[in-house]
Image (cartoon, rainbow, N blue to C red; front, side, top):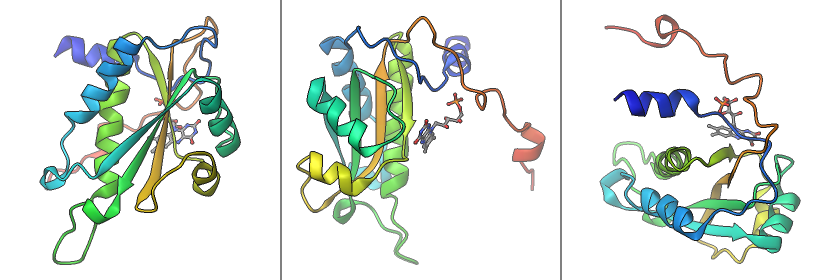
Length: 172
Ligand SMILES: Cc1cc2nc3c(=O)[nH]c(=O)nc-3n(C[C@H](O)[C@H](O)[C@H](O)COP(=O)(O)O)c2cc1C
C-alpha cells in the first residue's frame, strides 16, 4: 500500500514533456495492457484506443486542442456507445465512466514506469474526426498525453489544491 500511495501522491499532470525522448514500445505495450485489464460495466469493454504517435500524432493533437504540451505520444480513448452498458431504469450509460477508469489505469501505469501524463478533454471532437479515421460509432472522449518529463517539469498550480475529506465525505 505504501508504494501505491507514493505513486498516487507523486503523480501530477505533466505539461512540460521532454520533446526529444520517445516512449519505448515495451512501455507503451504495458500501458495498453493496463487499459485492457480495466473493469467496465458488465465487462462490456465498450472502448477503443487510437495510438497517435510521430509527426501525424503531433499534427492531430495540435489541431484539436490548445492543451498541446509537446508529448511524444497521445492516446485517444473513445467510447463505443452502442456496446456500453445502460441502466434499465433510466437508460443511463456507463460509457464515459468506463473510459475514465481505463484512462486512470493508463495514467497510473505510466507513473509506475517513470513516465508522466496529462488527461485532456478540452479538444474539438470534430477536428479529431477530420484527422483520425474514426468509425461513426466511435466517439472520442479523452486524450492522454504521455511522455518523459523535461527538466522543467513541475506540478501546475491546481495540483496542490485538494478539498479535505471532511468536505468531501459524508457518513450517513
Ligand atoms: C476529466 C479530466 C479532463 C482534463 N482535461 C484537461 C485539459 O483539457 N487540459 C489540461 O491541461 N488539463 C486537463 N486535465 C488535468 C486537470 O486540470 C488536473 O488533473 C487538475 O487540475 C489537478 O491537477 P493534477 O492532475 O496535477 O493533480 C483534466 C483532468 C481530468 C480528470
